Each structure stands twice: as structure tokens, then as C-alpha cells.
Length: 540
Image (cartoon, rainbow, N blue to C red; front, side):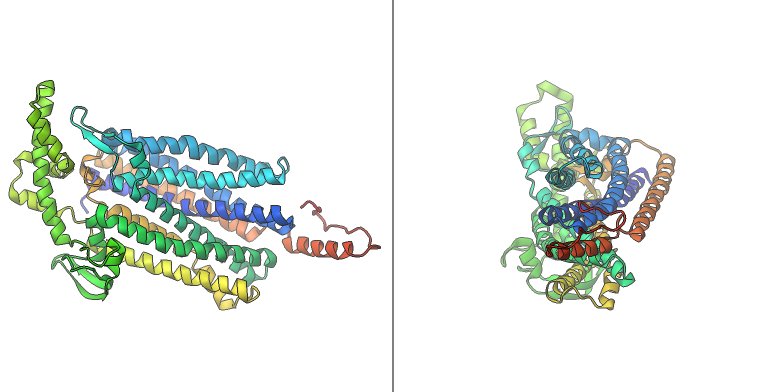
């Protein structure tokens, strides 16, 4: 990889984003699981559910703080590393980011404090309301971030203004209900639910293997397996929706994920296994499942999915159209109010392809000077890395189905086998804890790497988006971010492991035993008043 400002800026943002997303999915899922556990506590009044809420809530709090610390830096990077991007599309991209900060982040942060410090100051219903507001705030935060990201994948509701040389919003409604944004939101949130469910299930399995906190662990497994199975199945369904959206919004990304060089007759097959060969422009040893890709991508048996070669030829045509738009734009910029109407008409006719002309700016000062050979070479650069996309997508899918199997097995044991779990199954649950994080990171890699060479798909090339920085500046800050984020990650792991080893704040088995004795004595008219174990009260 060439060490230039563009590649280093991409690498820096990728590193900070992937570190940040180590914390996000667990925050999303644990917020809902904790709210579910407190709901059961309020409905039943049983002390163990309060202890479960406090215990898993503590782990949520640790993760929440680290997620905030790593996320703030990313927003500053839009101004530091991607200043022209911020200038060019700030009117659209900035709106959901601002709403996320004002509506979601403040809501979440405010009620997190009430959740942790309001146990003895709020009523049960009041504290339960706070717990659900924390969960809603967490998910709202993800919604607005993914609306912003979804617009980068499918820039609807906006148009280029030749007089200001910027993108401007035409319809906030279209930005908000962008099909890519909505599909990404539900898919990402469901993946977060699976992550948290697997975390709770795995930690609880570890407790059972150690013979500790058995009552808490069994109940936690039951909740996690039920919630996780529903979420894991929804990830598959919602991932299918993302594939359908990509088939008409990001066709090159879809073709690269499939290693599909030539356009297949409809319906296209899904390549379960193969070895893409970029030089030969074919996929060797392809194991194809008939019809599947056509059904996922087009919802029909008669619609073709274009291959990479046809899309490259289409990119050449769009670059040529973009050059016409660029020429008209320069005339508009020079003549201002005296621009002939036919020039503006020419620009409007070709403005949808202006971004393709901008791809040439990495190689020359004026796209109008491009030769056919340079246009053909630039069209080839619209192909993202086929090999890493192909395998990242398949590893992600394989991990997803593995998680479904694990969740389904524990759901079956919890629901129909009296919460009895073989030792081997508990060991598997502990070993699989990292799987949803790996799948989530792979998913983001496919989404972002597959969009290259665009920052905003079809509108603004990545090479044009960066700030005027030096390679030395970027290397220094990259090393600083990686070092700092690694320290934060080590701190996170240390705190999480500390509190997992420590377990709940009160011995829930003792509390349950006291509760059982209390219930038995209440049945006897002449029984003496029950006494709680040391440190416990009936309210607890």
C-alpha cells in the first residue's frame, strides 16, 4: 500500500472506527437485556432479578464509558482529517450527527447516571422507566449515526449546487428514510443484540463451569438464549434486506463480494466457495448454489445482476459524462450570472456523473485533458479489493450461522431440558464469546472497504476528501491513536474481567435460599419471623 495522505487518513479512521466498534455492539445489546431483567424484577419482586440487573448493568456501564471515550475522537476526525469532505457534504452529513448529539447522546448519558445512582431514590417503576430510556437512547444514538453513514452509501435527498460548489440537502425525509440507512440500522442493532446475548451467555456458562452464582447464571442463560436466538435470526433476515438494497444502490460492491466478473443469466447463483483471481478476472473452483444470489439481490428470477466487467464499462461511460458536466461547471464558475441557459441545462443533464469526473483529479489537474486510456484506467479503479471482500463476507456469514446454532441449542436446553447444560456445551459458549465481535468488524469492513474509491458513493472520491496534512503528521497521530486506544482496550478488559470474577454484589444463592425459607415460614401461622442473612434485607 502506498504511504500517502489518502491511504494514511483512511487507515487512521479505520483503526479508530474498529476500536470504537469493539464497545458499541455490547452497549446496544446490554442496555436492552438489562432493561428486560429489571422488568422481570418489577413484575415478580424476586431479589435475584434485581441482582442480575445490577451485575450486568455494571458491565454495561464500564463498556458505555469506554465507548463514549473512543467515539468522540471519530467526530473530530471529520474536521481534522477529512476537511474537504466536511465542507463538501457538511449540510447533509452534519444534520444527523447534530441530532444524535442533542437527542440521543444527552438522553442516554443523562439517564445512565440515574440508573446507577437512583436505586434507593426512585420507585421501582421510576427506575425501570430510566432503564428503558437508557436502552432507547443507546439505540437512537445508533440510528442517527447509521442514517449519516447510510447517506454516504446511498446519497439521496441532496444535490450539487454549482454556484456554491457543495452538496445541499433537498429532502430531509429522503435522507431519514433512505433504504440503505434503515436496513443498516436494524441489521447493526440486531448484531449488537447478538453480541450482548453471547456475552451474557458465555459469562454465565463460565460461572456454571466454576460452580459459582448458579441461580444467576441459569436465569441469565435463559434470557440471553431467547433474546439472542431471535436477534440472530433477525440478523440473517435483515442482512438479506441489505443485499437487496446493494443490488441497485452499490452494484460494484455486491459484484466484488461475490467475485462475479461476468453478468450471469438470471437468476444469479451464490458462490459459497471460490478463489477470486484478479489478474485473470475469474473466480476459480467456484462452488455455486443456484438461484440464491438472484433471489437475495433482486427478489425475482428474471432480473440480472451485472458483473464487474460490465460495471467497469459503465463506469467509463459515466466518467465521460462526468467530464461533460465538469466542463459545464467550469463555464458556470467563470461566467457566473451570465452563464447561457444551455450550459446550465448541459450541466443538469450530466451532473449525476460529476463525481466520476472527480476520480480523474487524483491523476491530473483537469479531467478534460484525460485520454481514453486514462479514462479506462480510472474506471478500473472503481473495483474495490475483490479478494478481501469475498472472504470477509463469507467468514462473517459463517460466524453468523454458528451463533444461530449456539443460541438455538441453549434455548432448547433452557426451555425443554430443565436448564441442564453439558460441560462441553458450556465450554463452547465460553469459547464463542469473541465470535460476534469478529463478525461485526468483518461486516463493517465489507461495508466501508467495499465502497472504495468513494467517500460518498458516486459523488465524492476518497482521494478528494482529505485534509492538507503531511505524511509525518498522520504517522504520528496514527501511532498515538493506536497506542491510546490499545490502553483503553486493556483497561476495559481488565475492568470487565475484574467484575466478572467478583460476581454480583450480593450472594444471590444466599438471597434465594432466604427467600425460599421466608416463603415456607409464611405458610405456617405459628412460624417465627424470618431473618435475612447478613447484609440482606427483604427489600433486597
